Length: 304
Image (cartoon, rainbow, N blue to C red):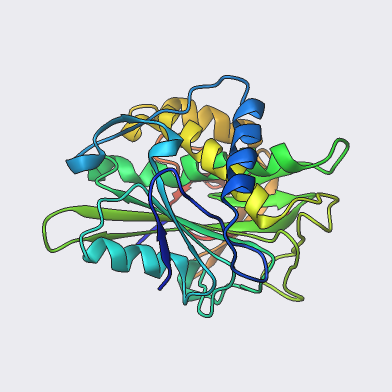
């Protein structure tokens, strides 16, 4: 969902990715990884339509800038700080380690080396009234990237409402969107992605897993190369909110638990019922058996 609220800068054409235990330039490797990721996209469109300022018009994934950090407090915080300093957006920030990574409701996010910590800064990506649908597009993008790196015969990769990614029913990725109005009138929105690639926390709110535990042998750097492409694909379909119907169709096709019994923890209560889908605004629709379905905009979902 959308929450309001130190490194090397690589010019276009000279991007590097972090995610390993040490910070080192990997330009040739990353370019090769991106070429492979694009090949696997099988020709699907990957242009993004953005609005406002220097970032307006159709651009390819190569027009994004990328900042790779050895360590930061939070890649989301880094993006927002750069937005406040006048950054034009279309900026990816990755880090090998976060010292203050966070998830929904301010929860601490496990951020040890070996996993992917990546945030994308967008400036004025859509009219504000359409931003509620962006978390669904982000989930579609990350889901697609993870599916592309899993070996044949691996367990099911699915989306849990609104934008957690599960492998075999266990959480491997969380996505946090944060937005902020800037003093100059622009609107900054950050899509933050944390993926358990090599390691995972011992405990958590939900059962957890990692890509390595499920048989994938890729690095955080290689996964980011795929995400770089799939995020472009999803944002192109989303098209500043105009393509939300197509995104909802893709989201539903990958969703976990539709038609099944779930429990949703809200700040003041818990609700149980049957998950019957999402509405045009991306809200969870819960049939409690007592009248019309309840539309829920935010909450912690427990399957089964």
